[in-house]
Length: 246
Picture 1 (cartoon, rainbow, N blue to C red):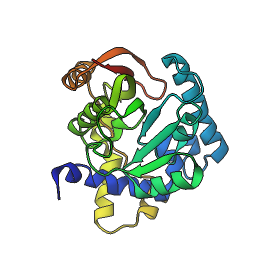
Picture 2 (picture 1 turned 30 degrees about the vertical axis):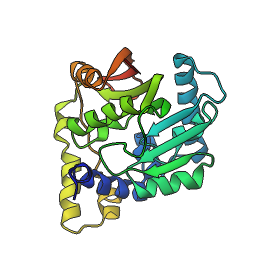
Picture 3 (picture 1 turned 90 degrees about the vertical axis):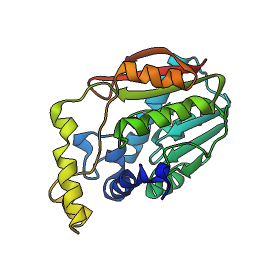
Picture 4 (picture 1 turned 120 degrees about the horizontal axis):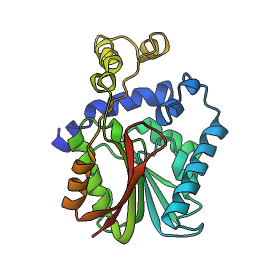
């Protein structure tokens, strides 16, 4: 198995589980909405609100602003909203099932499965905009998250923009991740994911962080520069970064 595939093989299996068990909650984690309680219209409305605010802050008006990538698209919560601002919307996800659901829920986008730690699906200087929110924090390691950040910079055009979010610190409990570890142990013993999630309330979601200094070094090494960073509204101890190509 190629190294780029092997580094994401375990999280791919975990996200396939989540896509079958509770896909909307896995994408937008709200404990009040767990176990299938998300209303589909409310779920997609949250994506419209998020993208409207983001586009305003980035200076984009509705219309055809070129190509955009929704990295970690899930079922297309943000891809659907991005159609109002870009002529070509691409969504990629590690999970076959998530991409299948995205295609069922949203038309007018190109949804693709990407199960490597790169974005070789796309050539250099391909996108005007790349967006990734509450996705990089679930990668198996900082090394893999960094590889994707470099790919974001590679695939945007000069004058384009990347916006991504990453926690810079974790609590000890979140760093140890006992619930994920127990889920993985029971899963490896043959216990069904439906029982582990539905009855024991365990899930396989991973969590990592990268310091702002590390993120800055990764962006710089890829030929990008951070325009600004700001606290995000989804997580404590987390920043959203706006990046341009140098």
